Length: 107
Image 1: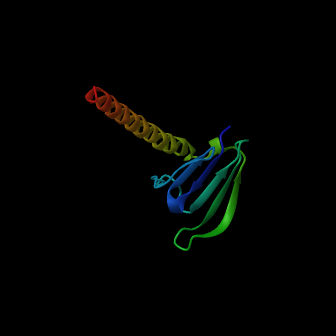
Image 2: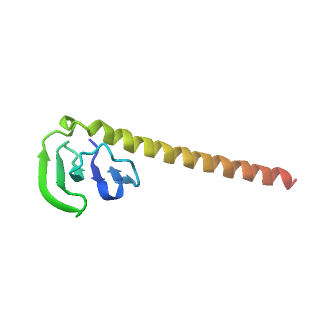
């Protein structure tokens, strides 16, 4: 099972160590500061005051799939990941086209 870290302040979601930031995390409840999900599916949710960035409680969850907003986490990370892969593929295609143009222009 995948591991996740979510940090509201920076809009970050890490999945198995791959992180994207500046993501729209508006699906998180207003008192959630951060979430850590472990490989066994358990989660630790840091609850607190976002203005002061102060943790006031921790909530342990036995199964991440029981969290009402959980499906948004993977969907948001996957969208960012897919966009990054598309950007990389586009850059590689442009570099290949440039190399081919330079090669054919040099004949």
